[in-house]
Length: 404
Image (cartoon, rainbow, N blue to C red):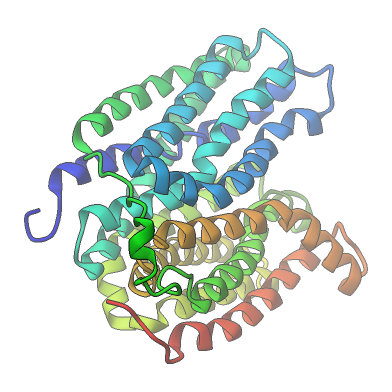
């Protein structure tokens, strides 16, 4: 590897990143799907956004163990191939068959949703030896993912909108780009063999605690799971906040708010190498503090321009945490336990996302007196992020054993 970096493998990794958020296309054209399947409830159709979270949560917890057996390259091809299959089901069966076929398509996307963080972390460990460079390039990959997500959402949305959305399924022709990316990944990413099992005769000499996960892994994963739960409140409630609660605009302004999340994420990924050197162990707590500031703006200053600023802060923070955490896990775990650590981290992150809508509604009803209050949910998220930030400080900045 040149300077500790496998450049050829990076080409394959970035080919994956370009189309890893292709499902943003589905989010943008959900309304057209509801028009096609008007004979069923909107809730039934919107399950295409919920099913991936369910599948992804389950798969995230087992993906690390699976990857230890099959290797990171095969895992990447599986989850990315599943995304391609998802798009092909939407393309050839959407708008023609039962709505439940769309659930099947969405389920295939769940494998990528649950396995992406795990496999990306392992690929960077496998192909970049320097920990600081590893985090920097992970940040670049996050930026590429965000840019790819914008491409699929915007171009796919334009294709779907033709003829009043009558043939929205044609937008999924864009998914053939994933096939090109899969070929590049197959060619460029080395097939690193999984860690072999230690012979029985050697196990007696091995420290039995060597491959156990440090307590810090669990603390980070649990803390981040709660962080993501509260962070997700912004996306869940943005449309209603803009259009009905505060009458700040239409779906156009709400869409721009989501776009600023993406823009913030792109900037964060590109700049990660710089600010992580400056902040060091305070990187993640600082990002959580930025989210608290963003929510404070949203709760106390209901203004559309300020909302865009808040969205940028939240997007910046969201993309600033993962590169640091994957690098931190590689410091404090062994090569064999690292996938398991990433699996737990990804799993709890997905749990946070999956239960967010229910937890926020319950807490808003409990403390704000109205489970449907958007302002109540956002205030709960504001307080929740502050609590997560406070508990994150000793987790990330406290003294502990760190493996190099």
